[in-house]
Length: 149
Image (cartoon, rainbow, N blue to C red):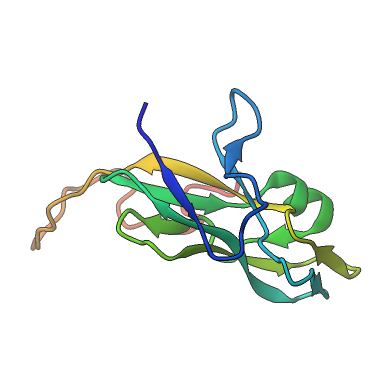
């Protein structure tokens, strides 16, 4: 099994390592690192929330930061850049951008699960300039071109 290495940032002595909540979970739970206090969200607020960890990914992988369904569906949180990408050569602290679309104020506290991280294999491609592209039945049809449902 390949390893993903997590390093604690200074001051993070208490948060558990990112972990899979169940045997079949696709994503590792990421928690809010807020040792100085909680972050209060009003409707429409956006905050960058630290996780308290830096990561070392295996070469040829990325870490995708995705919303947690409970925060999204029950409380109205989204990740505006979802999925966020952590590149294999990044060594800084993993941060999560949370935006709140709920109606009432909501507080994220130290240790709350705020997002999930999926480690995905990548394949790199040679980029080639072309004067023509092959034809398809769809052609250049864009948004909505194949129907609404």
